[in-house]
Image (tube, rainbow, N blue to C red; front, side):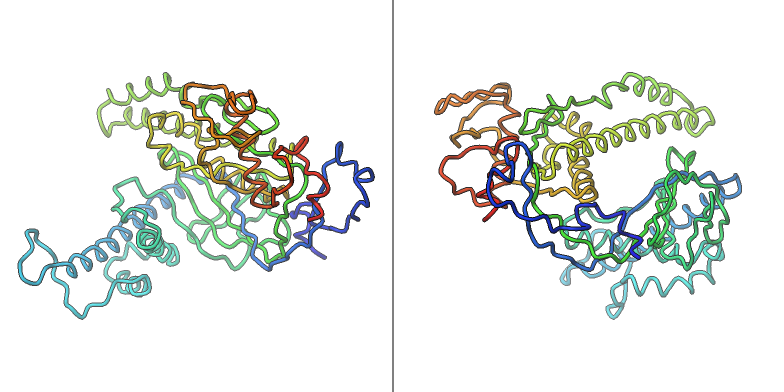
Length: 448
């Protein structure tokens, strides 16, 4: 009756556990106490992306490479129109520009997405090369430019840039009437059936909305990112169960409020000598020669391997945390600032921002509550008494002069993260300031 039900965590199937009458009946010292709350069901579309490896033949590979080059030229042409229009509107009235600029009539409207999309049929008559590309692929290319423009206007991202040869690595089929995945093949318009490594099946009740074809490792590996969605009633994940706070760092990748630590694998540093050797060999080859291209492919594949290793570690760590607790609090780190600091190489290698985003998704998928807290001063605050204990980065032990509480610096920061997270969801106004035993809140707080 509900084909999407196995995808929703089992804790959401039924939520009618009776409230214990007293603390002894609840066994709150040994068993986690779960909040009894009314779940808020909201009608929303559950969207997921599945990435599969595809194996096109030589003809299909050449066709997709031609499409990528055509999409790159369409993107650059649309961006050129946008920049020319902007340049014609910012010229001063009382003087001439020092640069030669293209004159556009004053009544020419802004080259919006709809306007540039409507120009595609006319452009196909002038340039027959555009007819070889699927029409909706060209439309999504123009849409991609204007999404970047809107991100620049509203969210402060960088201005759209021109794409040089080989820099355009993906194109999108925005819609499908039927499921394109049949057996171990995927049918793409104007490309045909392409063998696919279907390592995970598409769940029942989900429909394929779009497919993005991606070229990696200098056009030697091809992937498809299949976007599937289903209209389901998804409840908001409540604050429940065992709670932990985590602190991310470079000495240890993360430390929880329980004292559990995870070592930080040095993904780039482990293979840096091999990467340096391959890059040196590629630099000594004649540019654009076959040997140079082979050397560049080896470098690209090693970078791809490092990224896959890092992503696999993030997934395993996120699932391990969800196995330990049902509520997780983490610092809302300024990853952009960390990636520009003195330890930027180590921070980029650890990829804290990608891990936090992935942890948030894994918590949603596993039915765990996840929230980010203010990271300011977490390592300078005592978790026992709340006093401010200033210490430099080189000092790795937390020793409070007020209450004599002593522990590792990262462990104390994780406990402060836990307390700040609890303050956001539960009013911490009970007498003495203490951490919950074994990550479980007292029963009198649950009843509030």
